[in-house]
Each structure stands twice: as structure tokens, then as C-alpha cells.
Image (cartoon, rainbow, N blue to C red; front, side, top):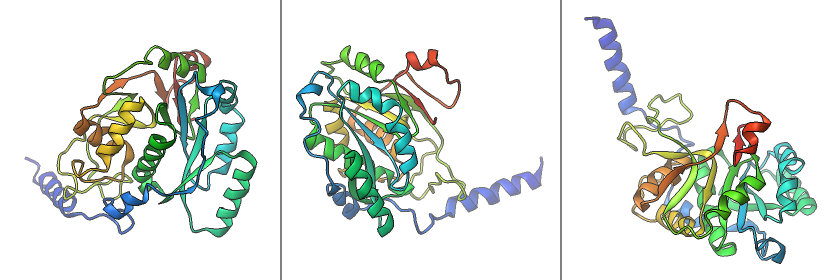
Length: 281
């Protein structure tokens, strides 16, 4: 037996067992969840246009407040087709205390009128709060629409999304369409996704949807949101895909359906034609 290796393994295990989160990361509190109901920059009536009543979709694009260049790339590429189909869309941002950035964001919205800003502070560790915010907002302003919640580095095939939903218009089952994953909880304190055993004890997370694209029917959206803010889903992890589509979906009895979304590998026109989205472009 290699005793040196065994001792090293035990030391690493003990370190990971007692490791703590850095100060800037924490399980979300009740007060933070309440704040997901507050809108700082709204987009009223975007789902009421009679021209877009046939395509009952809302595309919500997750984006960082300072990610103007990526938003411009999206506006100048696949959003052109989205607009041709009269599909409403918004870029979803969190708040910032940077006054210069606030002025730039307001100038941007004056030009494009497509930014939706919630109260949760815009950073990576608040993505769960951002998801709660857009779910709550969509329930109120676009209650009968499917929500396609995507990252700003994806490419959406609007026609494929329309066709996909048209075949499932009357879906009543508790289903969520995405590209699925399942991973071990990261115990290394240096990892971006580190979660200590004191917060999440199981080695594995539930199966969940990769964070770059979730296609959610209206009935499931409401159920996901209601369950996410309830006491049934604890701890309220900051890792949005694991929490919202893994922990919450499991508690709510929502089935994840593997769907034509591609990421991180082959990228060509043939793959695009048969996919709802290509991610991490």
C-alpha cells in the first residue's frame, strides 16, 4: 500500500470537508429573493403586439451589465430573424453601482429599447436571482408564452424554435426542454463552482439543464418559479442551472427532455439547421 498517497488523500478530504466559501459567495437569503420582484428598467407590453400572437415565445437573453459588445453582436446577427418573426425578446441584466456604466446602459436602451433590468446585483454569483427575476417578470407580463432563456453567446435558430413549439402547443406535462448534464459537486475551494459539504452534502447534483439554454412551457415556468422561492427548495444555491433546473425541477416533479441544442464542439450550417441553438459561440 502506498501510505504517502493514502495520507495525502486523507489530508485533501479533511481540507475539503472543512473548507468554507469565500466572503463574496453565499446561499441566497429570503431578503434577496424578495428583491427579485423589483424591476429597475421595465419593458411593458412587449408581448401584447398583435403581430406576434402566432409565435407564442419570449426570448430572454442573459447578459452581464458591461457586456455591450456581445449584445451588439446578437442584435446584428440572429436577432434580425427573431424580429422578422415578430418574436418579442429582452436582454436581462442585473443592477450596478457604476454610475458611468448606468449612463451607458440607459443610452443603449434609448437606442434599442430592449434592456430589462432587475434589482439583484449583476455578477456571476447572482445568476440564480437573475433567473428568479425573469421567471417572475414573465409570469406577469407574458403569462401565456413559452420562455426561451439563453446566454448572450448563443446563436438561436428562430424558425427551428417556432417549428419545435408548434408541435407542442398544447403541452400540459411538466417538462423542460434543454441539453442535460449531471456532475459531481466541486469540493476544491479554488474552483469557480466550489460548494462545500456543509451546504450540499451529496456527491452528485440532480440531473439539470446546461445553463446556456432552457425552453420552458408557460405552465412549467410558473411551477418552477413558485417552487424556487418556496421553503421546499433548500439550499438556494447560486449556481443557477443546478438550482433552478436540477434541485427545483426535481422537487416540482418536472421532467427534463433532451432537446436539439449543441455546444462547444462542431459548428457548421448543417448542425445549425437542425438545432434550436448553438452555444458558447
